[in-house]
Length: 306
Image 1 (cartoon, rainbow, N blue to C red):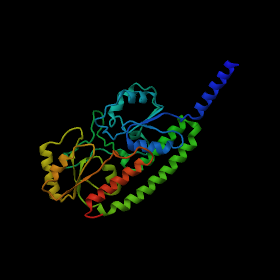
Image 2 (cartoon, rainbow, N blue to C red):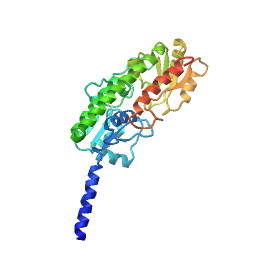
Image 3 (tube, rainbow, N blue to C red):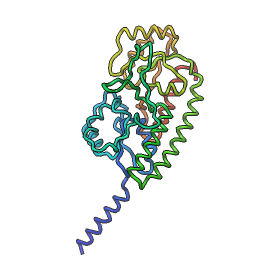
Image 4 (cartoon, rainbow, N blue to C red):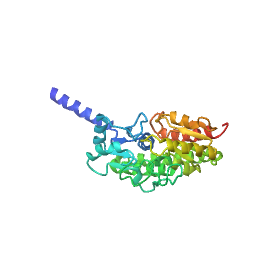
């Protein structure tokens, strides 16, 4: 009798555990992508974020626990092997290609080539790594790309977890509508600053700029992994003066002292932009708060009064 009761208890525990199962285990590299994924998995599971503290993917090193999470995940979502290079070793030990979703390779996602920019040198390549084929991978900052990523995540999860396929697809439809509404709102907010010249810390905003009719006059550093040379900074100061650049933007991940030295003695104001959402709480709202924050940052610094 006791053995039978133990067996029944074990069966009930297994049944309860199965009822509470969250679906596929999903690991996402950076906060903006994590937000888009979390919007699709709402009501089913919560994806794990690797760069939770807003660390730069250019210099990040995974902890052993994070490497284990990657190896054990059912789905890993990243931008590109050339963006999150810290993931490559762990993924090499991960069996199966279907379990990795690479945003830069998705249908409907546009990846920009290098900017031909006088302030950075002819053909300067932002985020260039060996084999990167000279591309800019800050692709999440284009709402059109975000919609395409949303769709692809939902379809991949539906294939991995057919029991929740309808939930994933319904969530994706709602998220695409929310992105479209955000897009229309930001277009109206950014229209007054479309002709204002400015300089960014590094060339991370081209997708956002192109989508909303903005264009940086230059970048403090062509490569965030390397400090800018004195000659580059002097040329940039001259460019700021010649163009009458209204603002020079720093980023929370990098030392703002360089930006302060650039604006010293010039009329340009200092502002801050963050392409990763460093201070935002991770979750389905983070992507929308990120783009709203960028629009607010541009307006606050480029307009005399907002």
